[in-house]
Image (tube, rainbow, N blue to C red; front, side, top):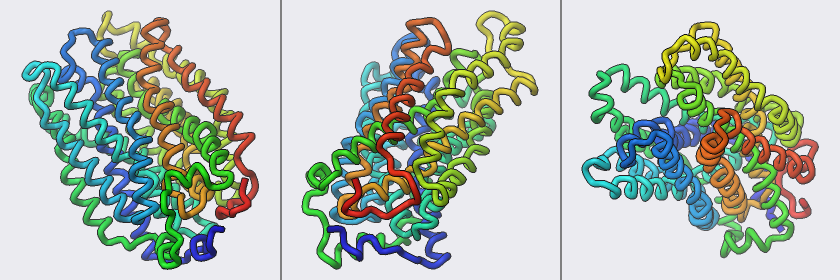
Length: 460
């Protein structure tokens, strides 16, 4: 049975809660910055590290490297989930953020393919593997840490900041890139300046460690440790605990897979769509995506707070349904808004949308951000409530990172390959649409409705 000590509501002071949310969220922002800076600089990474003159080949190789990092997230979830359930939440996510920071900075030190040939992309992929391992442990640790400090009535709201931190990492990556480009000449940026955002990871790591070292261990884990209820083998127990296999499958296909294809379509694929398919000038596309993402942060926290009142299931299921209806129309709207600029530009030239076209594109991106916020905002609280505290780190991290790592991490690669095969710039969206449909069916069937509740042993 799950002990009362492990599931009792925690009522920390307001000051303690601010430190918990601030340190956990900021560390998560930095860690996702490290992971996303690769995707933000995908074009220049391809030119530097991939020995090919074909833009499509470079793009496919870069997105394959992006996918490799995601492919190793489940292994990181197993490894760090085990450590988090055995040794504690705090020290585990100190290790993950350190590994991520060092691996990211190292990318900025790799010589170009022109200098070392195929060793360059090989080193990049190796460091992406390390990043994937680190990220597999980071999310679960931060989400659980905040959740286990939160009173039930505010758990969705407080953990919504962790969800928003993922977007914050993406926004920070864009902001740093745009800031560096503004301070450098184009020649300096292309020659070596693009490496600065990677090297900045060391400074972000120092700040993150300084903040997280101030934190104490999760009160739920402390209570379990004092009661002698720590799991002996969290990985094995995650698949033998009564009812947990069913919960893991629901978390994988009904939560992780669905939310992540919407998120990566709303954030990453839109940037690629604008710069590659729509031929928008790169800096302008980055500014548009950064603005939409920054404004869209409110949807993630707001949806988490809403789920405290109406339950976790409703915003997720309705968000999936709305995505199925609005995904293609949002991208068609973007394409329609950019047609005049494309027609006015010379063949093959990059376009700069006017104010009205930019406003329309921003509006479409905000709709996508709202859909992502609805399906992502409540998820940290939901997953923490789905699983028993003694194996929570492992049980929620494994399905979450399989879902996000494989269904979401491979989205840019799969969508780009579909577009390359069909020649239709919108055809890549069918991948996200199909996965969302599956997630809707599983979530509608498997997620519990009603008011949010702590895990109970009789939960199905």
